[in-house]
Length: 164
Image (cartoon, rainbow, N blue to C red; front, side):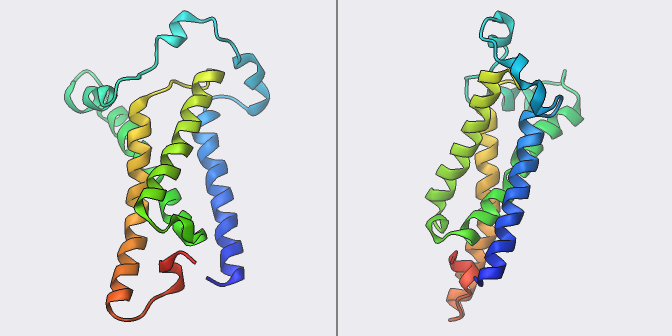
């Protein structure tokens, strides 16, 4: 990848991560209001989290008491939100050219958001968000990998597909 292209893609990544952070952490208030959210004494707040894998996903998929638009927003939103991360990361660095590295990087980013939500009461920690977000990163990575496989098979390797 050419230097200029890498700079532009890096700027897109920064913009994307800024928007993702705003959507996940600051959806209802500003950064300046964050000081009031450092409080570990609210029992009800600590009880509103999900630490059981697939509990929220099963609830949204199989229980009829949840509005369909909320189901779609939660499940699809968590997946779609992390697709660009899985798409851009291997283009920015060849260290992320393998599925395992994308899985780890996406999981770590998602885990960071979930921990910040938990500690600063900016939302609720949900293990299922980790699963769905990581899936989104993998889905974003797949077109890059497919592109690389197709060009390698044809004897033409594009530097972007290799993650350089």
